[in-house]
Amino acid sequence: MAFKYSSKINKMRTFALALVFIGIIIMYGGIFFQTSPLLMTVFMVLGFLCIIISTIVYFWVGMISTKTIQVVCPSCGRSTKMLGRVDACMYCNEPLTLDKELEGKEFDLKYNRKQ
Ligand SMILES: [Zn+2]
Image (spheres, protein in one colour):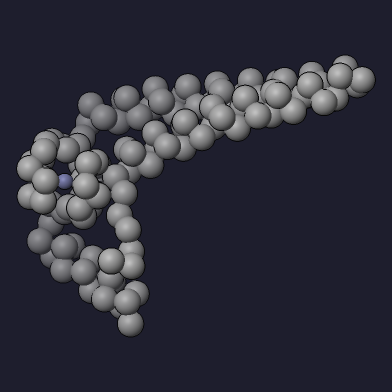
């Protein structure tokens, strides 16, 4: 398969996790500017902001998770959370949809990409 699907919730979690690491790296980068207290403070604040944003994203994902529809994945048989009308399985990335018409459209798009 040329086009890989990923669950929206999984994507947001990955983004939040990446932000934590970016924040730590930025804060670590501040150490190299010890001669300039102003630059060091800017780096520390930026790094701290990244970690705060990531916490907000995590919290937001948690809020969204309560609004998702639980479905049993036809591919791996595990119950996964769906966000919106089209989403992917959280475990095997199988594309899922609640709308039969949308399913057809999604497959058409995929064939177009292949050609
Ligand atoms: Zn699955």
